[in-house]
Image 1 (cartoon, rainbow, N blue to C red):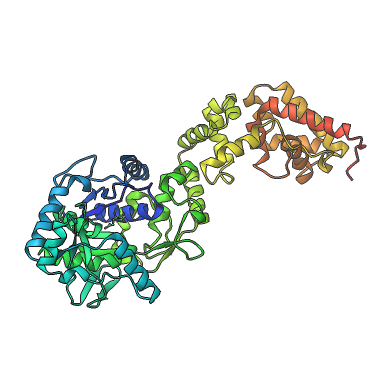
Image 2: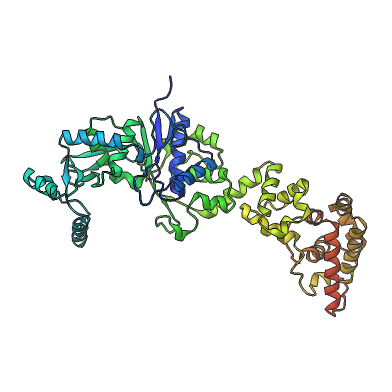
Length: 497
Ligand code: GLU
């Protein structure tokens, strides 16, 4: 029997996809796929001034990049089309007519200025904003007079004066006492549906079984429940997922760093890493396991393990996940990504190494501890391949006569073996050891001068691998330059004991 689970992600296309929105989309997706249900994408574009098709498309592109596909939506269509609220005016008009017929709504002539002044007064008294109900009791004569003056009313829902309980799959039963919620607008004076109304009509029309959304919408839910009931529509189940906070426990915002999915994509994050990390914000598998592919998440996901406490977004942890996913990529795929990201640096892009897949695979492997995001790639490759090295003047490591003799010999080998394979062979770990032995050098006294001469730094990737990646010409050039700097410094070579 086909599953009756139908869930939806309903972004307003007024901006790009925020990580919080992506997490909501992901939970809906996982829930749908886990139960063999249907995942619907709906564009809540009734705010004409702030919505755009560009944002709608950008959100879809971000969802696809994350690997989240949907079964019905504005682009794909489906049996409950249209999936864009601006194209559903007739549905809202029908539901509004029904609300008028059962006298669940009344015309409200209050101007935005009057409403704002009311909010200010309530604020000054330390009260939560709530519509006074002023237009609820207007006489028919008054209404007729207002209409005669050409006033265009909004349509306001008369909130029933009774207890409302929202049965939430994550938060349990949430109580809203009578009088805690004021009458709210369902149709604005320009006939545009307000959020709480459109969402009820759509969720009902589209036979949504579970509304899984951010818990900032929890205060809206009793309004929606009252509307469902007034229209005699069956209620979906609700699940409000916890907030995502910044490490300072404030709402995650721009000032905390990147907050949109596209910023993470542009900063060289892999979608697999972002999806894995987001899944663990407000959900846990119940054990210590941290790494999940999308299909593994589908298999493991349940709303029972979703948490009602806020989740803290830890950008460092996400970077760590990303480094893990980069290391886990098949070598050829990772090499191709390295080449693509290295191309951001024009000088790098011209180097022949970047067209050599084997070289790229070796470099990607060698640099795996240094590259956390793909945007680190140009910097790390440039620090390897650039000829503008910070060679330390007269470095102690290069001062001994033994080190200088070793470097001269290594320089000769590099000059003699222009073939990269031969050179790699001649400078393997064992070959370097026996070369060191010849000059009375071993361990640190062997590796340090070579590393300093060819990179200008004391730390970095494994030496034999480093020499292989640099190649004979670069090694010869750098050793010659380091020896030249050393002799130009005027320091007499010392003799190691
Ligand atoms: N358009 C609403 C938003 O973006 C959707 C809320 C809901 O899922 O009901 O927050």
